[in-house]
Amino acid sequence: MTTFWPKNPVSFLPGIKATTNLITVQVENNYQMITEENIALLIPQKPPFVMVDKLLSFGENSVTTGFSIPHDNIFVEQGLFKEPRLVENIAQTAAARAGYVSKTENKPVAVGYIGAVNNLQVFMLPEAGDELITEITIDNQIFDVTLISGKITSKGRPVAQCKMKIFINKL
Image: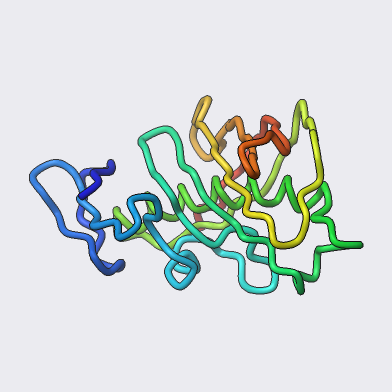
């Protein structure tokens, strides 16, 4: 068993049971928390615009997702996953965190908008078939604005990193 924050039970996902103060998830491969079939419950994006397919870990101020880049992905050009999609992957990782929090609070998944991208560094363009591991950390959250730091790796190598300002529409 692997234990994750937050405190409220998440009944919308299989294999999760509530303990006294935390949620405990039976993780079959000791790495994957939520699969592609369930990630759609956490983010507002729909195929073919989904750039995350696994929730790997969740913490109060961080989240890690995975994305296996399909060869037939509409955003793969000449075998490479381009820069704008890397930014979107980081944003959707933040959306997965916000969606997870919303679901634990029995609220609908909110839509977020990228307000600013700062200090974007792209170290390499991943190839179709590569798996991206994306981690975001919440730097600050004020009202409906979240400031994050995001980084993407693949095969243990850095792919990209940036800081991002995300506005949440809580209509």
